[in-house]
Amino acid sequence: MNNAFRHWMAAALLAALSAYAAAASLDLGRIFDVGRDLRTAAVGLDEKDEIAVGREVAGRTLGAAHLVPDPALQAYVNRVGRWIAMQTERPDLPWHFGVLDTPSVNAFAAPGGYVLITRGLYEMLSSESQLAGVLGHEIGHIVQRHHVKVMQQSAAVSAGARAAHRGDRGILVNNLIGTGAEVMARGLDKGAEFEADRIGVVLAARAGYSPYGLVEVLHLLAARSADDSSLALLFKTHPAPGERLTQLGDALAPRVAVLPAGQDPAIRQVDPKTPPPAAAKPTAVEGARALQQQEEGGTTIPSGGSPLPGGGSGILRGIFGR
Amino acid sequence: MFRMLLALAWLAAGSAAAQQVTLERDSPLYAEPRLDSAQVTQLKLGATGEVVGKQGAWLNLKTAAGSGWLFSFNVRFPSAQAGTGDSGAGATAGRLFGSRRNVSVTSTIGIRGIEEEDLKEASFNAEQMKLLESYAATRQAAEQRARGSGLSPVSVEYMDAKK
Image (cartoon, rainbow over all chains, first blue to last red; front, side):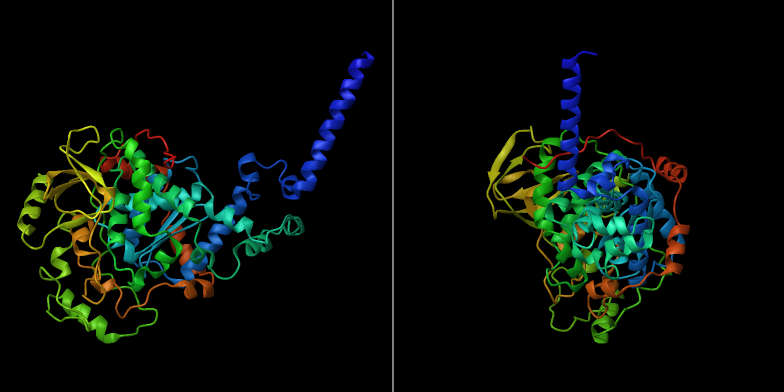
């Protein structure tokens, strides 16, 4: 080996060492992740951690609202959801889907494959394509690890904390999640929501559905009154549906000619024998009774309101739905 | 047959209420539901039209300036008015896209749903988690059901946001 080569070797080694040192001083976190797969290294959690975090968050959310007591419905949503998840890069996560027994209109994704949709939203839907769009949006959050990235940014999860709790997944998980299931009420940035909308459309199309189910749902949401309390949390944690439609329309415009038309199977209804969602804290009983009468074809006008043009929302709703 | 029934239902309900929508932005009205089809006219932001049909991402619209097809992203449906008892989606959007069932009983007034405080205070429910896990579908079961419903996987690329 000649001298020149030896010098070259030494210089290269020195360069490599100093690069390593620079990296270490800039980002201690990355050093702890050496040896983990490169994709999860970026967010500092491996897939097992991600699933453990998601299971905890989903279990806590189930503490706030139970599942609709309709096993056939839950099995159906799992089959639809799994089929859509199979069209992603993470088909083998432990995917779980559930319908929550609450009148609120919302859907939640927890890391690692947990998707929960509320009965309030489910009962607004008129086709399996619409369900596919909603589930596709939530699956998009999970595939892109949107929530994990947000948790990771929180101060509680320093590289030091992770090092200290190495081997104790329980402490790590609690550090990440915080109190209760508040992470579900925190919301993501607008960019993540718009991205999940674009993914939702694509996944529905990949699964063989009409790609436009999610678009229809956004139109339905946009037409809901802004002061409708059942949408309060959804509207707090997501950009306005109108803004989502504009963003999605702009992204979709160049693709409408090539997207397949897809199928639009009927959606499974909640078993009619299932009682309405239990009121967590019933308030204005009169209002509920008025709605009940309206449902039964009565002509009661809810207090403070005026009759609907055209003879009531029940008649107007859903002509093209099924 | 199914489509015919839909069309009939649409006609039957045609007189119940006007299907009015408002343009969210300036937009061409096309002769057919395709971006490369001939333009009937150029509609302005705030213009209104009556929806007489839909197809995929398109709405068939009757306007003062002519009839044609409009990219559905470019319109907004009238929103439900608070206190009218229209607790579902706005009537027009609901009629086009909404559930056929009257679901007002599960809606807003008098029944309180899951809210931020509920989530903050929530603790892990092991029993419900066990139930959730019991409903999981295998890949095989999911695929079998999908194929049985006439669904086949299609290759579709992810899309970018508008640059």
